Image 1 (cartoon, rainbow, N blue to C red):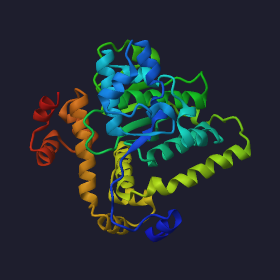
Image 2: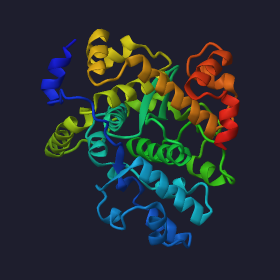
Image 3: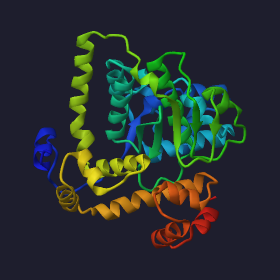
Image 4: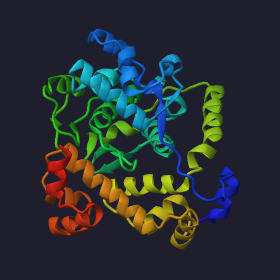
Length: 352
């Protein structure tokens, strides 16, 4: 495995003290919000003013919006439209063309599986508040969406909207004949779940411990249409140009990897270090250089996942404990009281 120093040289990573970056996303992923609000009889300027967002934000799909801003924007839209599934309306036609270089690179792949993995890897490394993971088991594949950002207090719309986008991405790669075998969402059901059921066209379960699409793994081997080599070269060049900014915040990158490993059900420092390409001692030393301890980082990931599931779902504490790899609800409760000063039940009651 290459040393971390070579990783720095390859990507020109800074050796200075860690300065947390602000996670953000392209406004292009919600570019249909103005259209949706108009159909619902809501004025966009009123929503932008209520959310404290610049009126010029929708002028360019590559404009960035931070996740706290996006939370305010979608919540303001929900409140003024009285529509608790507005995230679905915003994203139901968002696809690869809206996803920038990640979408371009996916379409330049040889097979559906290659394109999907490239897309997921790039989106997960970008300065986003969440990650995707592609997990194959028993002839089925599940594409899981999970929040990795620390301290987000509202994730309902992210979970629903992001899974709708991933549905469109997979269907665009596979063709219109593809549909998921099942869909799970780590949120409570909207007041009217019928629009969600019509969109996903598959068995749909709310109050899950993860937001995921399930489908037959045979689709991964389907070939994609060939593309012009110059198009592929431009897409790969755009990706290389972005890697410096994507990997500059090393602790945030490790945090996303930890969240991804939790989804795979086998989270350990050795496995995380292997993904980065270093020995665990090197990983630990570099994190400490940034003022971060691996154990504390991993604990904070578990804390945020537990808080999200308690706040946004009706899962039992035992189910949440199992999803976070605790042996019992009592062990999770002990850890949760150490993190927050409350029991899981007390936190859930106060958060709603």
